[in-house]
Length: 501
Image 1 (tube, rainbow, N blue to C red):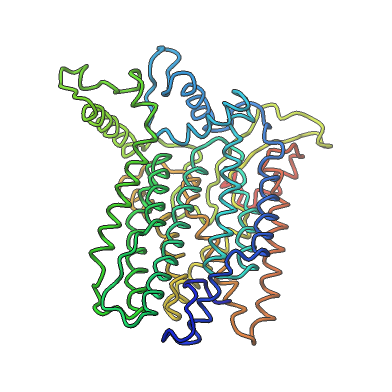
Image 2: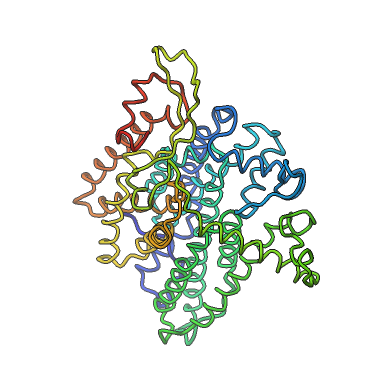
């Protein structure tokens, strides 16, 4: 695996070892035109796959019965609406994801293209951001392209990018927040090492962490799509502090806790900025008088002062929505538990028409959209995480720990809720963890070629693996997009039998 991009250029004669200086010089070349060529090519291919035929199937698919209709109502009323009672509708998710769906509906109307368009764009942007994240972490065009290609060829991400649900927007903002954290890490180390050019550092210099603030804003937007974005907060916070402590130690700043107070201060400011951005996603609710619980206090004889009254009403709204989420235990035919997700133990049937049509060349035809990860890819996640953990311990590589942290943030909290309250869960909850799972696979494949002795073997293994993933994706593609196929052909794809039916 090639050296990671972590630090800036340091001039000769600065007292920094030559090997470090050579490593830092790579950062100035992160805009490598070849890396951007790979980024553009893979992102374009991903966009074509996600947009081609997106208007089919006609009508609503799975939970599209909720979010596109809410989005259309928000265009008319500024808030979600209950047409039966001609009043505000009660919802349990923040508004941002629905506002993003509404953008497509504003452009293309209340049609399948309208309500699915921005989901496809968000899914494509996820792949673009992942490629740039992988390139910044590994400084390898091959590994960066591999990360983007694997997500492009994942049926799970493809289906969610072609369906008007909220999870693809959540995944995009979580990944973008992580990308901003990486940029903050590089910026912080760059400033520290440049300050070191003037001699040993007595204390950490004052550095305004613009990218850290950007990460907070993006995190606030993630929570403005779904509250489950909050699961990443403690994991990301620990990661940021660990990176900064290590950066100061590498730069020779004396004292293990030097600068820690500043880290906490800037972290709090980033969190507050994220909270402001989160509140901004509720603008439609704030500026109208018709939103659910918009004037709860006044309607119940309590004082409702300007600004504060609106915030207290919103707090009451949140308390009710939180109670709904924690009490959601109604059984569902396609519910699954977190320990099943990476094993593809119970995928979700998004579309199964009673009259699929004819013309498939067989007496019985089937048309289905199944939310299923590309099997060869997904069944490699657990082995990759196990190897990555071992490499993290043996190599003490910050990249391995960062990837493990993101994967844990997207998985571990769901295990807690599964055990604590047995709430109803679905496999699409794992989407925000998907980029980190793919990065785990890429890291392990890169480790196979880290030494000259293993380069040929690693290259062969990687080539065979990617080919198998591509073949698996092509084989399952008809049930990712709802193509009409013979019944026997559909049944041959149900590898785990009734678990996939």
